[in-house]
Every structure is written in structure tokens, then in C-alpha cells.
Length: 198
Image (cartoon, rainbow, N blue to C red; front, side):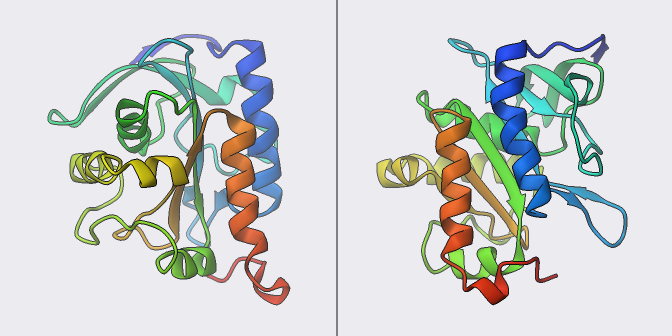
């Protein structure tokens, strides 16, 4: 990692971070009872395979600043490696985000949230990755690539992480499109179950 000051451009930061704040207040991003952060967002650098992503251990912050994002400059699925530059190390889920960008050139934003009820219901509605693939691993990245070879999966923009209880990936052509997919699934759950069920 090359440690620097903030690297995310203002325009990309504002559009992505607005959704990060909304999802934090909906408890879809945050910290669990064991103090471990969950959830992350990324946005592609236009015309590039590089992207900006929330840094590791940033789920605890109510308001994320530019210093909480880093840039993934390169990655290797087979080598299980990520090269990043910025104030913090990239999220441990960076390879999963990279797999989506690699598989769908139209995707500009990826959102990874946690929610037990959405995850359970979503398994009956959306494609599900192989439960044997752990999160943040090359196996998960390869599995995501496999799932996204299906055009309908790419178009749907939702992928349930079968081996990552509560984990769901949403993606779209920008933060607004990806974020609205999150809200749509959340709103499909009955109001009494809208809060986190952990």
C-alpha cells in the first residue's frame, strides 16, 4: 500500500458518500456486537479498472470523510492481492467489488450491505453465490465473475453472498441506481422487520 492523503475526487466522494450516510442510518453499514465493521461502497474511476472504496474498519464512523476512502489501483484474483493508495488500507471485500467491475463494464458503483432478513428473503429472489465461497476470497471473486456471465444477473444488479450470511451486493451505473436497489429490497420487507435482525 502507498499511504497518502485523501485521493477520492470531490464529485465522486459526494455522490457516493451521500448513500453511505443513508445506509449507515439504516444500519445496513456499521459495526456488529463484536466490534467488527461491516458493509462497504465503491465507485469506479470513469474509463478505468481502478476504483475508490471505503477503507478497512470504517463501518464505525457515522460520517465518513474523504480520508476514509482509498483507491484500488490494481488487483489479482489468482494472487489474492490488492494494490491501493490513499489514507487507509482498502476494504477486505475489494476483490468482490473488483470482480463486479471486471465482469460488467457498465457498473460504476458497488454497494455491499448486511441485513439478515433481506439476505434470507433475497435467496429466493436473486442469484446466490456458492455457499462454499468465503467472503473476501479469490474463490468469491471467481464465483461472482461466474454469476455475472449471466446477462440477467448483470441487469438485475443484486447478488446474494451464499457463503457470507447477511451479505448482499448491489451494483449499478452510479450510486443512485445501486442505492435505490438497496432501498427497494428493504422496502419489500414488512415494516415490523425493517430493523436489523441479527
